[in-house]
Length: 320
Image 1 (cartoon, one colour):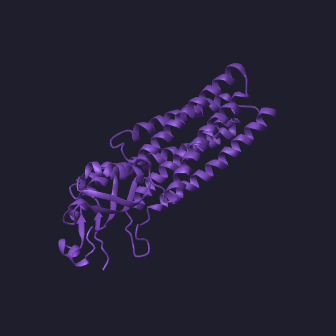
Image 2 (cartoon, one colour):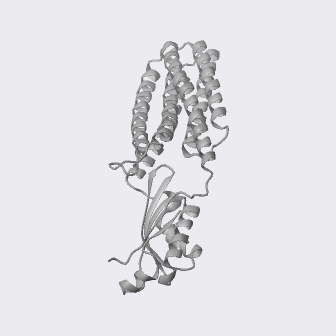
Image 3 (tube, one colour):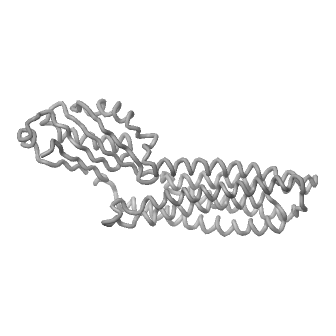
């Protein structure tokens, strides 16, 4: 018989689940409405950019695609997150969101390459730009983004996917402002190179989003520890919060998806008799201080005598 107990720590049972459900439903609804608005107007920008000859509008439509993708991922996360785990996928389908993020990032890189190529061509061969049509579409884009931003900032803003979507929409708001500026400059001066210039600026904003998105997705898929819960930070912090703890080791921390952190570790109590209480306290600290929602904790016993160690306390410790 091995010298081990396991402490499993799940969601706290004192949460107000009805409130959580309402917040999630509200998030789901506002994310879906925002997605429909952004995705619909993206096509207006694509058609408007093509008809007016404005690359800045087409680039902004590309940015709107990133917004729509971010909102679609947020919505998918709410929907897929409800799908129960099964015997084949014991963690459920939460990683679908991360895989979608990776594909989204790859698509954005292709959009950036296309915008850069088109901008380069237009510097040497500037076509005619219908500044009036460009201005009308850009103002429409600004209004749609402002409306979406207003919807997204109502109510619960703590959800990681909602925060991500807000950042995307803010970036797109700047893209719309840029397209408005470009159209006004063309109307007043006729200087068309401002259009490809601003499209490159928008492309750089998209590139930054894509780079961060890809880095984050790969980090999660490689089972990387989140910044807020590195094993070193946990080892340093636990003794301060758990007086009966002698040692914590073999710590592995990973994210199931963005904002869902898990951990496994071994702990040794100063006294074997206190081991179950130490496990409960460690699990509590991991949730409260490091936002680790599920920890599997194995006890390393001080006593070499299996029988005396096992008779000290019941064989398993469960904390909720």
